[in-house]
Structures are given as structure tokens and as C-alpha cells.
Image 1 (cartoon, protein in one colour):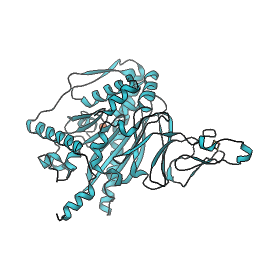
Image 2 (cartoon, rainbow, N blue to C red):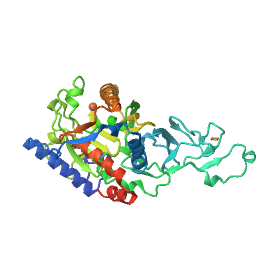
Image 3 (cartoon, protein in one colour):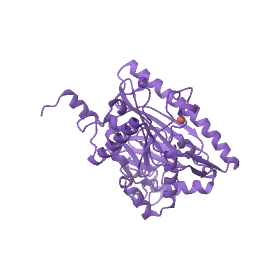
Image 4 (cartoon, rainbow, N blue to C red):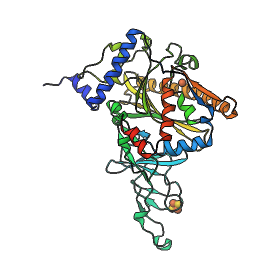
Length: 420
Ligand code: FES
Ligand SMILES: [Fe+2]
């Protein structure tokens, strides 16, 4: 059959997606359209309390670091942040310094950013490097972390280079994202522990997108920073001066293992994006574009969110990766703004620049000060507990899954995460 130009465009834009994933997305879409037609809105069974010390306790924080952040696959970056051989990026997760780098074969590695001589950082910031030379005494490492050179080797004495590679974390590159388990001794393959969320979002084809901008925001306890991504209840109130006033405070939640998808009810007609399922009005057939099936916010457990929208007709996402800092009351949020195609003219460029500044303002100047104040209050020990409403099902799901993951032994964790 002859392909039309439109077919080709759809083909080029959309990565393959499994039939099972497409069926799940179609079920989401049918439910959204049904609720919209009926004016209904699913609610959680009850109000869920949470002890305030979950945000302040050193013991709780140690458990989260060990049993969550070092056992489950974490999204650490988009593949397109390090597209070429030698491209690298450094970051820190709960005090663990991490180096992401792509080798000449195109494979992404996630390494402990620490020299095996005496632990200095071998890289900082981001860039491109043929090899990494430790700035302390000059040992050199290849792009896959192998030790390739010891300065003044004869003076140093005999060691086995093959045993002194940088520590390597198990890695998977799926759906245009780089995931790793931050325990070099973990025997598990992160690709098998994604509960199918990678399949659901593979239709974005993020691997071929472009990075428009990236910035790091600092905040309080990682859960307080992330809680703000998990409900839309606050949108028309906290964000009344920015994007909130027209919006509903309701959200639909779809769970996929510990992960979730959060979608607002139909928004104002003036704001409807080309991917708007509600405007589309029906579940797209399999030969129609996938976009209306992917809209909304995707929550990748434990701390990543992918927000979808259009700017100047270009499909964009804001990838927000929230991770703990070294202490219980600190976190960082890396906001990386990706576009399906780079802006081609000044109008699109300036629309994207305006949007990135706007999103940094909304999160940095509205959400973050609020969560920083919450942290202060939790620290007094006087509040006792907080509560998540029946309309805050996404928060309930997230906090229940944290408890579930912490409580699971390794075998139980595999059971929990390997099945959607
Ligand atoms: S700590 Fe890296 S060469 Fe000494
Ligand atoms: Fe917010």
C-alpha cells in the first residue's frame, strides 16, 4: 500500500508500542471519555493519614535511601541528554555521586563517580570526554569505567587494573530514559523491574527528542517536593496567579504498579492542545496518531514526573526528577525540558524560553516555598500527622507504595515490580 505524507509523518514521529500497552492506553482513554460524559470522578475509599515524621525522621530517611533509592530502578536522565559517544552527565542521589556516560558502542553506563585510588570525583558537571582523568593523582578511566592508566605506575606498586574499574550500577535504557539501580552489588536487571511503565510511555519516542533546557532546583524533603506533583487539588488555589485559576482541582489517576498517570478533566477550550483526547472525542483507532492516548502527567516511581504539553505546535515534555539530598530535609529537582523537534524559528524559540521560565517560576517560587514551609512545620513535631483526601488518590498510592517497597524483602520486591 502506498504511504501518504501524513502516514510517513506519523510513522516517523511515533516509536513502536506493544499491543498490550496500546490496549491499556485505550482503556484509560475510554474511562476518561466516559467520566467526562457522565460528569463523574473516581475517589479513593477513604481519607489516608500519614505521620508527619515521615518527612523528618532520620530512621525513615535511612530506610528510604537503602530500600527504595538503592533497590528500585531510578530514572536518572533522558537518553537524549547524552546522545553521542563520550557524552556524560553527573548528578547526586541521596548523597551518592553518579556519573552517566555513553561509550563508543552507544551503550549508556551509570557509574559511581569516584576514583578507585582514593575516591575523588573523576568528572563534574556535564560534557564530552574520550576518557576521565582523576584530578587528584591522575588515574584515568575509560567511558565504561575501566581503569586504563595509573600515574607513575612503577612507583605506585603492583595492583590489578582489571579489578579496579569504577563501580558500575545495573542500567537499562528504555523508552528514551536511562534507569539504574544504585547498588553495584544488585543482581537485578532494572529493565525487568519497570512494571510495564516503560512500554506505556515508549510511544513518545523520547530517545530522539532534543534537550531545550535543564535546571536544578533545591527543596526540602524529597517527598514534600514530590507530593506537589501528585495531585491537582492545589492548582487553582496555590497557582491562582499563574496557570491555576481556570483549572479544575480534580484529577484522574491510573496506576501501573507503583507508577501512575495523572490527568486533569477537560480544560478550557482556549487551552486545548492538539493532543487533547477530550477534543478528539473518541478513542483513536490503531491507524490514528497515538498522541491523544499519551496526554497528561506520567509519574515514574519513586520521584520522576513527565508532564506533556505543546508549544508552538511542537510536542514537549517537562521531565522532573526529584531525588533526596544527603540529609532528610533536602532534595533536588532536576527539570529538563525536552521537545520532539528543536524550535526552528524565533517565535517557537521564544515561546519555549517563555515556557521554561514560567515552569521554573511556578515550581520554584510557588510550590517550593510552600513545601519548604511544610518542612519547617513537620520539624517542630507539633502537627502529628497530615492527611490525603479521597480526591488525592495519587498521593495515597505513592505513600502506600513507599511503605510496601520498604517492607518487602528482595524476593517480594521482585514480585511487586516485575508484574504490572
Ligand atoms: S584519588 Fe584519583 S588518582 Fe588518586
Ligand atoms: Fe504545583
